[in-house]
Amino acid sequence: TSPAVGIDDIAFATGANRIDLAELAGRFGVEPAKYYVGLGQSEMSVPAADEDIVTMAAAAAAPIIERHGSDRLRTVLFATESGIDQSKSAGVYVHRLLGLPQAVRVVELKQACYSATAALQFAAALVARNPEETVLVIASDVARYELHSNAEPTQGAGAVAMLVAADPAILELETATGVYTQDVMDFWRPNHSATAIVDGKLSISAYQDAIEGAWADYRSRGGADFSEVDHFCYHQPFTKMAIKAHRHLAKSLGSERTQEELDAQIEPTTGYNRRIGNSYTASVYLALLALLDGDDDLTGRRIAFLSYGSGAVAECFSGIVRPGYRSALRSDANRAQLDARTVVDDARYLQLLEDAASADVHDSDRPRETSAPFRFAGVVGDRRQYEPTS
Ligand code: CAA
Image 1 (cartoon, protein in one colour):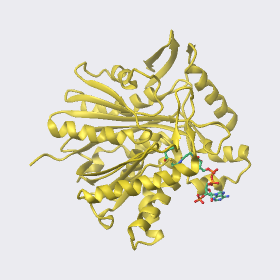
Image 2 (cartoon, rainbow, N blue to C red):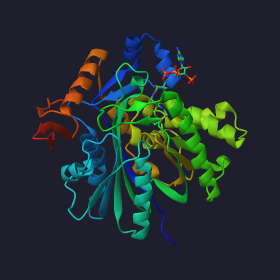
Image 3 (cartoon, protein in one colour):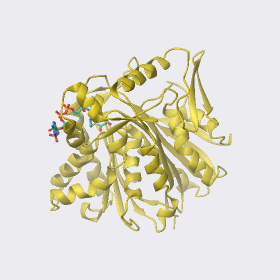
Image 4 (cartoon, helix red, strand yellow):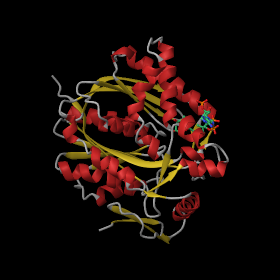
């Protein structure tokens, strides 16, 4: 029989700063409740001037490499939709910052917020082929929309790193997966633009249609029944979206669960995304991390994942939580990381966004701000400079 394959370790990193969405509500002239309740978001992470998707990715992956070493590591899959180069994989910078062996392949994957799920499936296939090998999957994004648009309060920043291995300590992946693709212009970012373009209302219905399609495919390929799933981790562009999508899916399947029961299934997955904002590719795995770090003992429980990337591709798959998983977690450090962020007001946040936009196009020295293990030092002759902070 083939060995169990799945998530052996998982860690995250986010930006150095946070802004309370009440600050944005003030500028937009709306009640904070529109964001706190209507979107289910309380804060957004904002990167420091010397942070970006590479520094967050390296910070997320560093504790995993520290714990497991890199002797068995053969592949790094870097998922992002806010890439810093059109050609070179952001993962190659991470490879150097973490001191990984040269006998490791690195590649970047893109399909909006979905690509980390493709990376996870590709990683599982590589490990199934050779159970001695491990794969590092990293999802890292900075979400940017046009300032003063309705989408602005759904920005955010974060990275999740996962080690995929045989006989995993945290989650065994089940083999059934369901996929769905539909060419739809709900959200995209043309090459000339630093911010995404979004048709907000269309994006919500496209998300729900895609989830329904991916679920149907998952079921038709031997996936579990809705009633056999204990927890559901959805992509969370804002946490209310997961609640909306879960109610929608349950209704389409004729589930007899009450709205309260359905909402209670989602609530334990929202704690981190509610405070980080949209982290695009990382978001569905931050949902998993929040669930794992919660009080409930999840041993033996089935978790379904509903991953969505605009444009649009969705995938549904599931996994079973392994006995003893808690000893592989870093729950206290995870919560502390969220609290340690510096609180910024609206003026400082707008300044940080302006600085970040200029850093990407001009040669520049970035001020020393971050206390994360790695920093983006600036651009010299169109070459991005990354270095450890100590
Ligand atoms: N108290 C409580 N709730 C309030 C309120 C108040 N004072 N005022 C408004 N609300 C509620 C509204 O009723 C609404 O809730 P429902 O949809 O449940 O009815 C909610 O707050 C939001 O209000 P609006 O619909 O008026 O919000 P908006 O038009 O300003 O923008 C948005 C919302 C369309 C999501 C916008 O933020 C956006 O475009 N975001 C980016 C796109 C996005 O995240 N899409 C999600 C699916 S696509 C995807 O998942 C990929 C991805 O990562 C981008």
